[in-house]
Image (cartoon, rainbow, N blue to C red; front, top):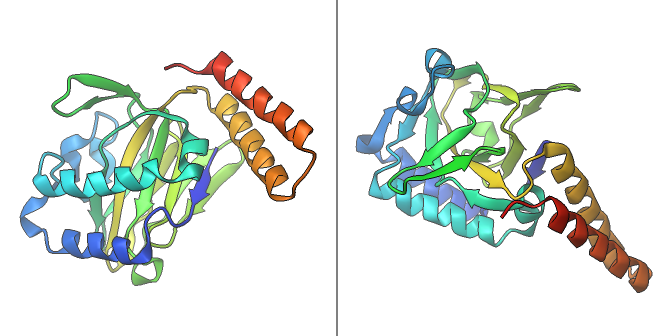
Length: 228
């Protein structure tokens, strides 16, 4: 399931984070430092050192926004979120086709996280650079994603995906992974669709008894499938 979530960060906040990243010359490192065996040969970008105070501060801002966003909660059903990281693609940089590693160790915690959902939070205005599309493959073909600053893309971490080469400008983004309470993408999609239907019924003042029954069904399925 590919989900586009607009407005996770307000425009002003996205611009502030992007400006701080642009001026953080001493904190950028080669992106291959966090790449696995599969990703290292095809990864060409830069990242903010995830151990740096700046990464932790900006990551905290992103996490706080996620915690307040109902569509993110509905789509990801998060059990754990990997501390958000930040990357930079300049002209000629790209990330070739790869699948994200299944397990990540959260730095400094000793805690492991299963990567069920991958996330990219766009921080640069999409008209400020050319190329840099997030290309995600599934059974229906290849989906091209290039969103406005502050918008989030969620997709299964099992997906083969890549970042197209940058031909102009700079693409800044935050990226992270989610261990969902629902590991199976098909079940997670069913719950997301059911939750959306319930919300629409509530907005149209539909039969309240039927809506209550559907809410009960949603939570009973969640109770049946969730890992907490």
